Length: 262
Image (cartoon, rainbow, N blue to C red; front, side, top):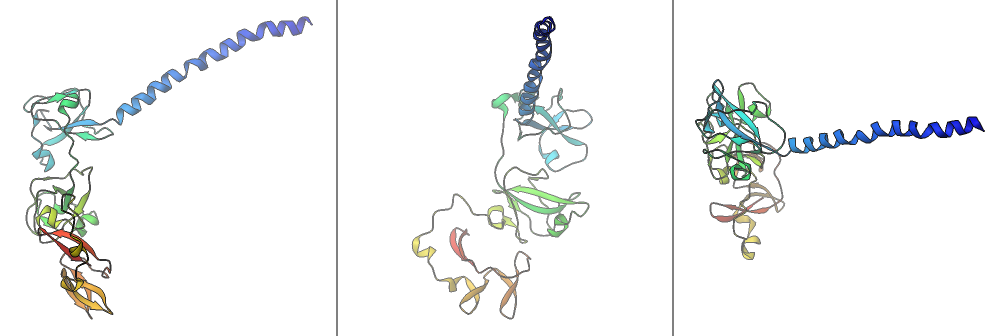
């Protein structure tokens, strides 16, 4: 009886000793989780002179010019104005969404510039930004990279220099471009202008023969974009892609009017 009583009186302190350390453990776990969420919240990005860390405009970094580099801040930090030295940031890109800042700098939501517009991407030689065939970038050929141009910009034709874009991959959609270039929205393959007016019912059900150039057994096998056919079957388009034709037709807003594409 005395032994049993002794065990009962000593057990509560043992329980207290084992539970106290456990009770303290969730505190650092919760703070780690919050820090992780903050890391994914996003960051500011600016362009700086790599040696001096003086902030410059974005164009040199977008074009990957030598001697320039991207510099990053947390969203709580104050972004320096153009011409001022960047401090308390990092050359290492954090996780999360990126935001640019106005030339005057600033902090918080007042300085956050989000760029989510769609892009058209062209394959260029990095050193010159001269446009080449997409296969060089698709295959990861050394010295070539994708250059992203805003959907309201201008796309160069093959062999011409690309301008006013960026080598930084955007968060929005990026469409490949037709070889002839031109207005980005028209040159983008598969892009549909969200601001284009709805087609009229008679246009939507229009005659396919006006747009289809070759049919086999009443099926459209080549459109007005086809530049090469073999035995009546389209094998090459003006975009330079080879393959079997699509038999699906849709209405496309192009050149300020609706066009039937098959």
